[in-house]
Image 1 (cartoon, rainbow over the protein chains, first blue to last red):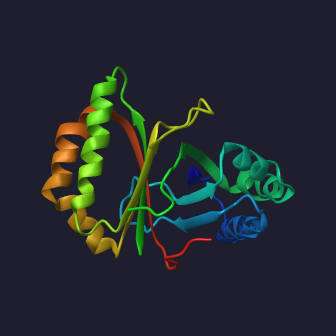
Image 2: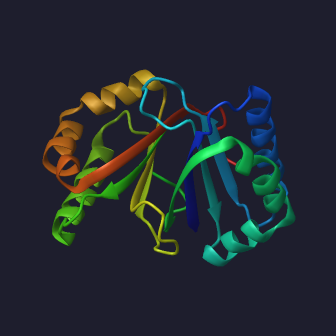
Image 3: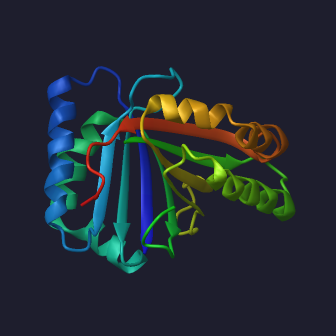
Length: 102
Length: 102
């Protein structure tokens, strides 16, 4: 398994409608077969320094993750949504041997 | 479920031994009963801008996550390891309704 974690900070002045369109475009990418599992969520707001949104996505391997990024649905997600609403983005990717976390 | 995602950047000049002691202290926290699931890993190194390490941890709720932070094993982890090896740390926390991600 290959896990990709991305934490996001919204750009300034982004409307709630644009954020929701971003979330919807993210959900539409579940149709991409290389995406084995995905969780995401808005920060719960307990701490001021937290970033605003996170996506945890799992793939078979790095090559599958690259095919996901190249998929038309992902290209739409970047062009029409992420590029408009995201201010900062930080990624960590790692291999993950255990399919049942504990 | 309450998910806590933390991405880390190592401080400058940290030894590989200190990083491994940090990873070991993280693994020891699996004994804390509030920690329902945890995955972690070093960045795979595919992209220069990525951070260096990530932890994804799941709890029943925010109160359980706070008890985990207050646990002596977590206090040791912060005092003896994280405070010495971590340069930057970014957190996102979110409620998570679906126990089986897809």
